[in-house]
Length: 404
Image 1 (spheres, rainbow, N blue to C red):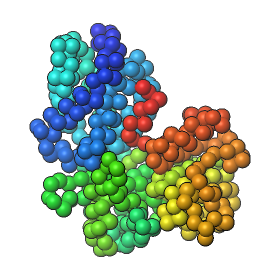
Image 2: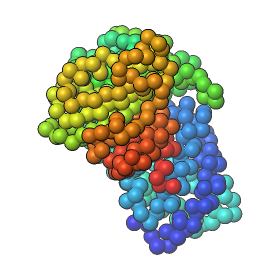
Image 3: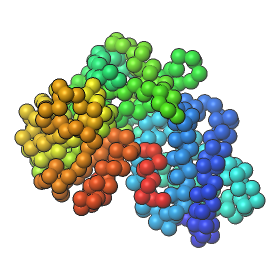
Image 4: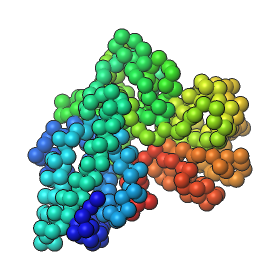
């Protein structure tokens, strides 16, 4: 528990952090990477380049300070961060490095406003949070029977092109068989050595098939360059260089976006996704199909164009196995050849009372672009769904929306 001396100082720093948080975050990362360039292999340098990681850190500082009197409110965020840290191999030894450069960044940016008392309060608050994360990460490593940063060599037994921009990679242990246990909805880190020899990078990809299969399947979207965002170096490397019989280094499975799939449960479940966000929820759907579940299941997927619709054959197979499955596909650019097909609906995903009939009390799981998840979350709340029954697979700034 934070001391009574530090608590008011942390509370009082909220408006200062709102104003100066982005600059503190930029200064922190610049300082840390200059002193410890090896940490570039742990952090997503693509997110660094476009400023996403700096935005996350700035938002986290504000959220933590704003909730310093109600730490319980941020525990779900702490758990999610711990899973992400475990996936990239964060170690207890990393925390003193972060503390040193974060406090230095606060001192540099705030100048004379960074009093000795304020810095001492943030040092105490930092280590209170760091202790929670270190303990949570230790539990995750123990559960995975692994250690921080441990990677497993797997062989790519085959690849399948799912669409023009998505390829699936089937991974097995070098001796054959599934690389390990996981829960539907979880992800693994994949290691890629960039071709210019500049660094090794880790990226997280959801496992897109059911856990009982004798392989892990990763379905990766190639991130092409867009306005204001460069092409994804790791996804481009995977699409351009990785083929069958090559080896790939992967982490154990982590992530807390894991629907409760208790055998015999009859509670309705709704899986709403867009684009490549289908992957963790397809794992859930295939798991339910394998179990022959009789529970009501709503599966809705949105795509921008015909050639971006994914895993249609697996959806048909799920319908054959799940008597309670209702599905709806949405496509913004639907060609004339598919315009009359049902249940494809032209346009963006629109949640209506008719679509949700029978699922008013369901547990809802959302995955896709942040704008999509935000839109569907608001639509569900407007339709009377409790936010406590809505989970989103997010890690970026939107994770902190309800804490600001």
